[in-house]
Length: 292
Image 1 (cartoon, rainbow, N blue to C red):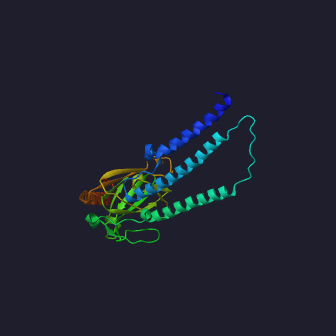
Image 2: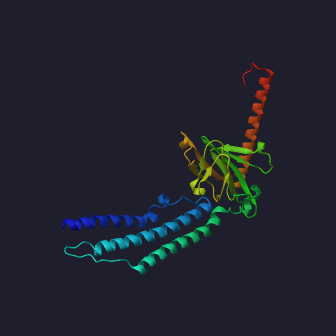
Image 3: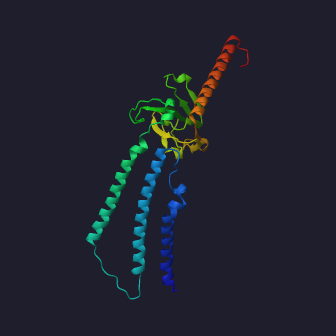
């Protein structure tokens, strides 16, 4: 094979390999190039929208690269050939401009049609409705259409996540709370109030939906609904300091009765700890020399 021909063949082979890898990528690398999903309906809808956009992108890429390869092969340099002088093709230029615009319009329409299902929380299952409380929508906070959810406060601080579980009595002092691991019942729509008390963090459990920033002095909102028991792991997705990598998070979904028992135990443990602290303070007040 002549050296000049090899110079043309190698770039073409490389382009063909790249195009083929992109065509088979969705099937072979679905968990690598696409958002994680399977834990909550909003995460599944994000994945569907992403894959639709990716499919359109692959079709456009293959089409453009196909024309490029065809052109490189058919009109490759030949000895003695004289290049034709082309000054433009108005119909072709209008066609690809209109085609690109149509693709953008279609993607925009599909995206805006899918956004309500991603942003708006669903109602909880009827079997688990007893574990929800009335929640009021305000500002950017969205609530299920029946106005009830399990509303959990998520607070980020260097370098841990804290979760508070309001019980509907408007008295935060007796609410259960936990660190690092959030426990929720299956079949219940969980709405999140996401905040930070020091620097910017980002709450992200990939299989439960998109990530949401935790900003000091500001509240962001998110939601999820898990249908089966399991553990869903995540990570602070905002560089927040030297121990950022240690700021892990996870959500453990359990049956409703197990969740009720867990909340009761958390409250009992917290009450016992508060009693022990109060007794220790009282002992110190009566005898400053005593060891707590």
